[in-house]
Amino acid sequence: MTLRIHNTLSGKIDELIPGGEKRESISDYPAVTIYSCGPTVYSYAHIGNFRTFVFNDFLRRYLKFRGFEVNHAMNITDVDDKTISGANKENISLKEYTDRYTEIFFENLKQLNIESVEHVPRATESIESMIEIIDKLHKKGLAYENEGSVYFSISKFDGYGKLSRLDKRETRTGIRYDTDEYEKDDVRDFALWKASKEGEVSWDTPYGKGRPGWHIECSAMIRKIFGKTIDIHTGGVDLIFPHHENEIAQSEAAYDEKFVRHWIHVEHLLVEGSKMSKSLGNFYTLKDILDRGYSPRSIRYLLMSAHYKKQLNFTFAGLKQADQALARIDNLIINLKYVKNENPDHEGLEKIIDDLYKNFINSVDDDLNISKGLGIFFEFIHTINTLLSENRLSKQNCARIIKVLEDLDKVFGFIFFPENGSGDIDTEKIEQLIKERSEAKKNRDFEKADMIRDRLLEKGILLEDTRHGTRWKKKR
RNA sequence: GGCGUCGUACCCAAAUGGCUAAGGGAGAGGUCUGCAAAACCUCCAUUUAGCGGUUCGAAUCCGCUCGACGCCUCCA
Image (cartoon, rainbow, N blue to C red; front, side, top):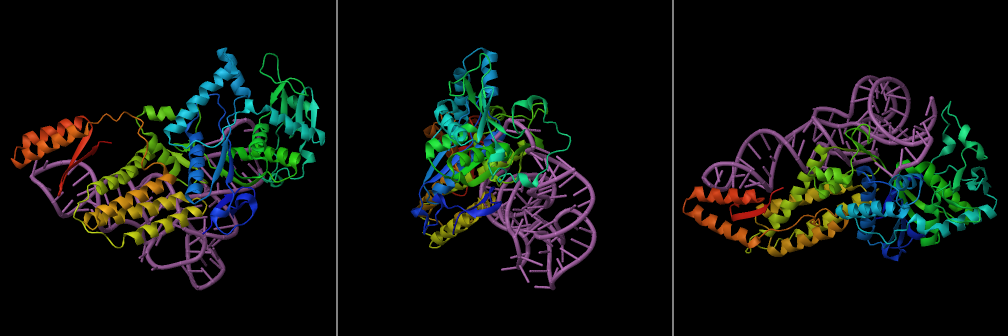
């Protein structure tokens, strides 16, 4: 079995071959080098941004699950028009301003149980590497200066447009390129370096005081961190053009080697059927949704559950459904915990587990088809539940199943979700009350029994009477 | 206008030429039970937006129509 993922560059589903050279087994490959376009920290990231970040997390987790090593970088864009104007508006330094939103962003990642990656470079700390590329392009005659800014000349790079298939596009009729654009040789040339205006943050360069163009940081960071062709570059679909097209142009023109082997682009999130926008009032940050009482766990599940290449329509009804699906998983775990001591071992369990792994990997290896993978996982839950209800699984069997769940959760990250809230539940007290209630039930004092049940429910503890006694769980 | 993605049950969502169209939610029955709740089990698309074509065979390929969305401009 091989892992195959859609590649925007080839337009096909390509096998992932880290290092570019086919090997016998996964363990023979070098670490998969990944670069993900991170946030511009000028404001709170929204739920659509997090779809992409949750996807990045799923990708890296799955690669590790399959036995690959991972070397993953995600940038923080902490200087651009929006961050500069935001800082100016509040009359604070750029750093003070971007630090605030960077911190919130990391906090959000943590809430969604997104793993931290190996490298988190900031644009403002990568200026030297940017200048290095610009110098190279300049010396090769591929870039030109004009009034303190430096532009990349796309007419001098043959491969321009290969990612977004520009050759097949026509520019919209009637669009106007004139006015502001007089300083560029070709209207489609883009800025590598921008001359700074009066009072703006700037860095001293051979080209004068200025700041980075939008695209240069990614190229620079990738060169600085990985030094050569990387395996995977991810981002939202909206970045294909011009951002990623321009990254390719800069990097490949400067270093004469392939920039990225595998481009993966995540489709957009829609909210209630349309694109998020402030004017429609459907613009949600993570906090907005958490404030409405939904858990970050349901959000993670929902964002993960649809295939990355399909638009995902985010709705609150969908969040509720996600929560119910999670309840099904939680109930399995509770069912496993309460299994009877005297149950015999089930011989067929290992076969069931083998099938689960085989089918799960088969599905997800096929362009990261998590939806199908989840279907297989729920079929497994169904099988186990049936065995449990027939008392056909032993304590050891259940311990084995828990291990499997823990293993799968390395990919999912939503089964054993870290509790963000306070866990001030007094287990002993609950057990004691359950005992008292059982006594009362035995004496047919149902009034007292119901009173205890109600009291616990008020505290968020739900009691379930089963054939084998009473058990409890937290109310959802 | 150009380029592209998509339209599967009440909702979400798999399956891309071939056994009865996954899975989750909701709903309906049942088991258990003092009651309730929960849990579990079973059922729930003769049919894949519409029309036409290719094929022994199509949700899947082709054409047209209708509809949704994205990119072409800052954007995950």
